[in-house]
Length: 240
Ligand SMILES: [Zn+2]
Figure 1 (cartoon, rainbow, N blue to C red):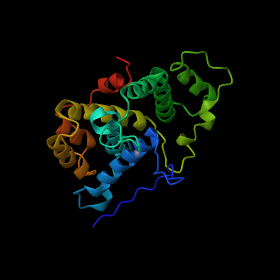
Figure 2 (cartoon, rainbow, N blue to C red):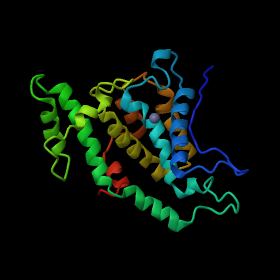
Figure 3 (cartoon, protein in one colour):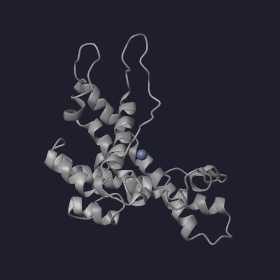
């Protein structure tokens, strides 16, 4: 038997009203629920390879993909309703939310790419002698539209790389790569139906149930029938 639990720090119910969660909180619940499904639906018998015991960039696919359902009208209408009138989310508000999501998306994208790139460069190419601040600044400059100050030292506070309780060294890219995978994998649901039982079952059998029993790249190909395509992520943020 497998047990799973989500612990969330969310808006509580107050003054006799139900808990009125923000959209971001709903997204978080969907995200964590994805981890839970990955954990619970595993069919792998070797514990160290089962459920969420998978590589970094693979552990966030099942969670991040769930967030997509918070951005689909068909899905939102099943739960995102006014707590007194039961009215669905107004269309103009929904459109505003979508516009806010893509606001300065290119900047955010470049920032994350810079972080992932500097992390990999430090681990793979830095010679161990050159000044780390200057070395990192030069790399990050390539991902910034404005001129970085001469004393720019973001790397010194980039604790993910050296002081995080989970070791991210050379693994920061996994955030972005997991986004590439989740945006792309979701296109199958978009094409075949966001509530398609057939795609859902296929996704469960080929990805959720398989843990780390096979190379994630292979698992991905089993589900999608091809390699990942980064275009879906660019499209999501209105960048193509
Ligand atoms: Zn997660």
